[in-house]
Length: 331
Image (tube, rainbow, N blue to C red; front, side, top):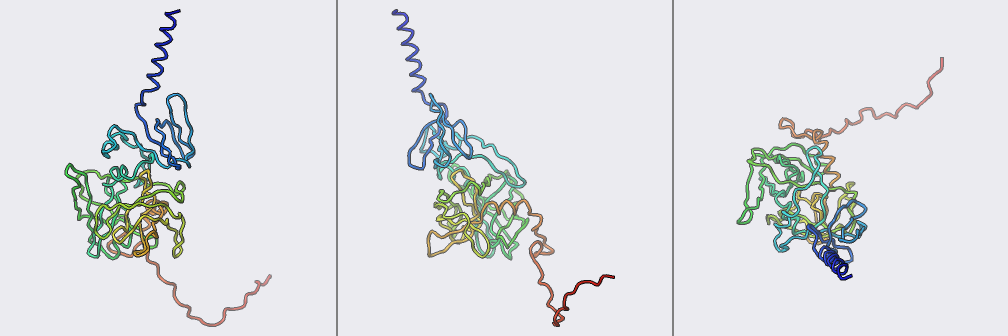
């Protein structure tokens, strides 16, 4: 009897030890009501997030999840979060890439994708842009480079002492479409692969969702602004925009608007200077269509208007009334 009690006690102690031990890799799931759940995320999709609580599985509806944060040994060091996350499985779709990335904090996303945001400079002014692949292809607004051919980009690379600025003066205009205010550029003569972003999906973007922008407003490089999605389909002169409360100022044009997963869901395009909270971004689905069909808007030096210039039809020369319609005669 005593022997059985000792064996049972050892089993109970072992179970308690295993139950009390923290998971080898855990995340903090932040719910929309403010509650936080620390557990291992074993699966997630657009409908739900499945958590391993150690003794049971918990299914949380995706609509109730505000963010998923990586739990690391040093929460004050944002670089440790990137190392804990590890490589992201991505998918190549033409010139750009997509990925399934968990939501996290803005701080960690800035560390993760901040190097992919660049400054675009021309003799006429400055704007922003973002790299879409490691080969140096980047997206910006057309109005940032309009009527310009001398283009430079500044890439901000993380170093031990902060950020190092690397300027590239060999920037090729690949394509542009003024009607959607987008341009595709390519940095040439790079000495190493570029950090790049992942493009998101408008179907998963919701009103009220937290977003943030990175850009160079008024020349203030690598500035971050935070807000929410006010609406996903604001009509302006026949085109749809994402309306957001994230501040957008001159110099932000062409930069990325991110969700909390670090995916680009829009290109910051315009905002009201003296009316905060009214800012607009080009939806990422428009950006994807432009990139996939870039050859239709390809830039040629011998014809700068190639890809978008349309001639007006000739005016009517015969001002007489048109002939009366009649049925053809049957022989």
